[in-house]
Image (cartoon, rainbow over all chains, first blue to last red):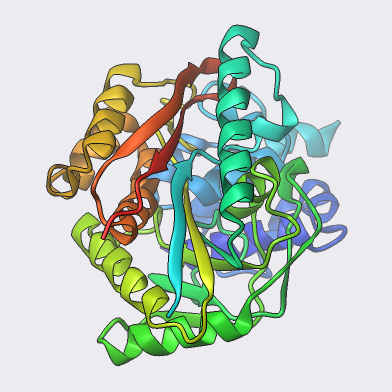
Length: 89
Length: 272
């Protein structure tokens, strides 16, 4: 798995202007810039912390990713939101 | 020769500054302890404050991930991540270079950074303890990305730091502050839990200066009992060893559910 790709993407989302909006607008196109597998991309689309953790993402970086995408730290494993819901809205 | 004039440790969660009055009956005791520590550091008047802390995937990422890294910058900008403190603090590059050289000369091959932005692990204690106007020497310790340095290695680092401080030329006075812990879970399903009993046992061991007991803890035990955030106790171990591990006093401990952490604030004796 490409933990590095997910971690680099997370840092870019946090620090580079416009990246969060780009991801929310078209997740797959945005994630194609990074070395992220299809399984990982699906987990990101679903904001699936359990899957990302099982795939090996560091929980600190994982926290950063989900909080950046609007999921409170305390709801990482209980929310029912996905990026696809947001892209459709 | 240089002198170690103060040693202590504190938790560093951003909520300390962002939501300071949570659980008022508890937070008032914590703030009193931080105020006490700040006053004592001010009285000790160190030329340099060595801050031993970790990073949360802001400065150090998988592209380059050191185990230990000492800052040698003229100044340090803060990330200001997620509403945490922004700003700039002065560095102590000459002192840092001398300490780095001494560490390496004695077999402790610590990395160095001439541009090392600081996240809340450094900035929250720097601000809460009134250190923004003092030169700081940040020392990063990997506390969250396996393989971690062992607790024993952290203790060795602390001892080596003490020797390096005492080898400094002139009459440089140094304070050491460790940041992190105590029990908390970051990015894990147990987020929000606090293990009050584990924290109090750990702090009692720190107060006894029982470094052997602390370094005998396994990471698996710490992770299970106190969460991945408690792996940050390796910074405390380094500071305790640096201080000489002759004892400490817990100024305050409070489980803080609204901050999702157990907060510990400890003054360490500076022994021989």
